[in-house]
Figure (cartoon, rainbow, N blue to C red):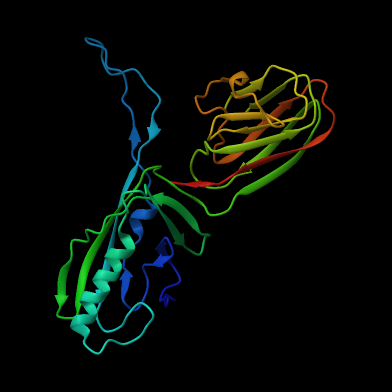
Length: 272
């Protein structure tokens, strides 16, 4: 099906836009809201207040109001019977939002002037439909974003020349912590230590590197060439290996015995 898109700012779910002649999402405000934090401070009996404990972001529930019409289909073809057209469009929309039992998530893409962002979401065909008139209905689509955030649809890729001891600053777009980062440093070295001086977090590999180290902080993996060396990675002050924070991050790369090479850092910016 070739959908006729009727808005410049809209969302689609697995390629089904929520802005067609058949239905239109009328308010995307909740997509721009942030998730709740998860975790509790420690309460000690008979001690005033509580002891601080770090928190992490929680999943997010988003409600998107929709108006469904009966005069035209999603391709902008007119229906002979608008009442039947309304029922047909409701059926089409529910089919688009149905989540098969073998599928854990759908891909939501938010098209916006500031740049497209996306998230894996869980949907439901329950729309809480209420009639507006004989040929028009109001509905509410409720989705869950398990990760709690939206991410850029494309990677930000940063390259930097590093030698045995190099300090440089990168600027991370977005508004949230990026825990899914790829660090790739080619070439042999006696060891590797990458420190985020801004946030005092460190990732180190205290062993000789023969080919070059590629670290994936989302999968918690590290490879020296084709050899999996994940169990040898050490970190300080972070359970997420070496995340990045929005804004300026000053990184120091120590590679004793290493020659000048081009380091690549790849990630998708996070928007709360």
